[in-house]
Image (cartoon, rainbow over all chains, first blue to last red; front, side, top):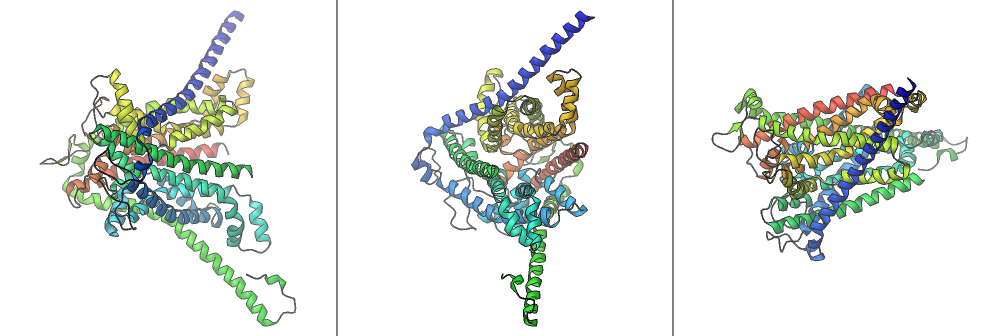
Amino acid sequence: MNIGSTANSARRRRLDIGFRILCYGAAGIGVFILALLLIRIFADGLPRVNWKFIVSDLSSRPKRTGIWPAISGSLSVMFLTALIACPVGVAAAVYLEEFNSHKTRFTNFIQLNIANLAGVPSIVYGLLGLALFVRACNLGYSVIAGALTMSLLILPMIIIVTQEALRAVPNVLREASMGLGSTQWQAIRYQVLPNALPGIFTGVILAVGRALGETAPLIVVGAVAGVVGSPKNMMDQYTVLPMRIFTWSTDARAEAHQVAAAGIVVLMVVLLALNSVAIFLRNRAANR
Amino acid sequence: MSDPTAESPGASNKVAVRRMSIRDLRRIQQSGVRGITLLCALISVVTTLGIIYELASQAFPFFREVPLFRFLSGTEWRPTSDPPSFGVLPLISGTLLITVGAGLIAIPLGLLNAIFLAEYAPKRLRKVLKPSLELLAGIPTVVYGYLGLFFVTPLLKHLMPDIQASNAAAGAIVVGIMILPLVSSLCEDAIRAVPRAMREGAYGLGATKAEVTVHVVVPAALSGIMASFILALSRALGETMAVALAAGSNPILTLNPAKSIQTMTAYIVQVASGDAAAGTTAYKSIFAVGVTLFAFTFGMNMIAIRLVKRFRQVYS
């Protein structure tokens, strides 16, 4: 009996160690894959990236092409998207967290709806944009149609992160402000929002970063696959960085694949810069 | 706005009137702002209704040309040939092949990763691991497509020499890597939410750490963990650019991962980027496929949300 239980506990200890190794291994694989992918992309793309590549126009010849119209297209779409989605998203979150924070059936319904929207595939937003903005509103394949579609896509994300940021603001601030005679809106405007700002900002940057890398909806609402110039105004046609990467990747010529990798490097650097700003803001907010 | 409390008690009527009007003004401002924010919150509801309405109203004419039964049971998808054939099963099988394959990679790896982060990792290691996983999640999907095409497929060629240039296996692998961080972070949240007392109780009975984790913590967090699996699979189902590049655009009914296939999302991309004229059956068909895709993901998301809610009720 005694001997049996020692053997049993030795087996259990072995299993314990085995499981620990399995967990360490799984975590290691994740980091290994990340490193592998990043190294591969930069090895493929970095030799092709130079200043001339960044500032030159697109060309159908991979050897001579630049990427500036795609960069400016991406930036214009993202700028407009942020301009549309931020106020609406923050306002919606303020309503859900501040003006109607007791959980009524109505807010529960909106909340469920937002959670669901966050899970809808991005290409479905593209189909909505195609039917609604491109055709019904007659905006055509324009920058503004793309930005409106993208706004709908990132709206749930912005609402959710803003709600979290608002929830993190201590209630004392609201009570003190209203105790001094302010209206609820004044408490929100002068106390709650300024305190939640770093959190909101971080979330917005991450959402815009996600939109920057998103291609599927923009293909459906008409980002140009071919050679095109920088957009001049909101109704102009446009292309975006991921769209060009997609087109170059499907090109039969091998030089085009290298250009695709170079495009990826540019896109990743922009994303990395955005995310660093977000992380910096988050850390600063956490330290306060 | 000037401070109304600065006025003396013996102020004239005029001042009292002005004081009232400032207060009224504030009240109007308050309810005005409240109304505006309510409208913004309602935009999300309008978006859902818009998606359902637009998809349905565009898909409806399609189903008048192609009967629903033939759409759902047909095994051939040839939208551009003459006569065209609209059987959605090849697209569904392609989509499921990718989703299941991605799940096979992401679910075990993601769960173990989450267990490691929540139960085993020293604080320092966790501080490095978590951001790098977030980085993995932040890589754009088109980049995963590129990697599937030019990195994963050449590697797979060593294992399967007759593999096609774009194939289901590469698509499933890159999508699996892509949803791994999602599984990992959601599972970690679920595991962390398990009360400490349950672990202490099991340790007190003499269980090893692995036993506590496998027999106590994971079962206790199960509904949250299941929710994360479903959400991740739903993400894989709706994933577009990675599969459009890595898995191809060849709608055939097969379970062979070395073959080029087409998912529902990749078909929408193919038609949309090919500039199909509005009004043709092929153009309408992308909305029919969109409805199918939306129905799948909507159902999965609802189940996941339910599970998370139940999980929260148990431990709060």
